[in-house]
Image (cartoon, rainbow, N blue to C red; front, side, top):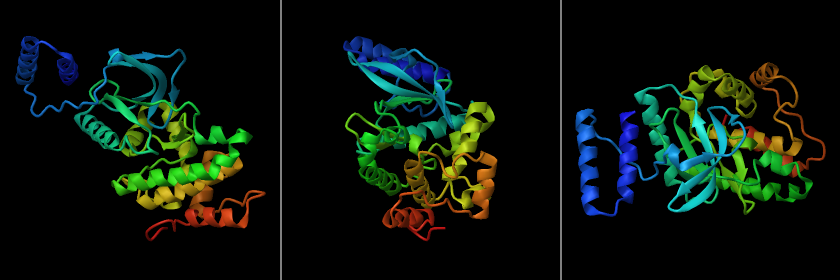
Length: 303
């Protein structure tokens, strides 16, 4: 709570125009830090207060590690429609630290063409939340259900691959790639969302029933090795290549891997090494590409 107060004070300091007021506010921040015995308090320029947000009507949608809301963000005399996500997390210093570090990594990638833009957030609010750009055309799977958008499928997947290359070149594994985490912006550009929150997902399944269900369904995009080693702290880079192939199957069939079978049966099929059957109408060239990705030969040693 004290760190949140300090963040709010520091934010107001940035708006201060009179030097005497600025000096008073700096002194207040210093005294609060001293009183609370806080050491190195970091004041990120991306901090956003809940007071700057107005939720749109309607209930939030729960995902694998948080609840998504559409909101209006008021900043610098302007207002911007945004996507806001509240994280399902435990209350601990370690959780706060990991959230802060993830936000810092994301901020550095915000100018990338195929990474969803990070506007800011709060790693000290309860719950933590982040604010990112709103993608008006939704996720890739829903976008491609409209027949007029089907010709854009392969150009969009090329953009997804470019986005993955950006993440990997910065040492980041997406860890949860599926069509619902690929969003389409106003310029019909594919952007990767919700990457790198492995720790948050691990905790979320114990904190929220809907998150646990979503995480259970997400196994369909993961390789067998991930399911065999559940204590793996961070998935390997090659797992994203495999998941990219699963996304292509999802886009081609309009269904997740193995279609309508329940999640438990899907897990058994993956552990047995079963391959997804080739969809009708898919060319040899396309299926060869999907098969190569699913074999993990997109990069490195693979699986």
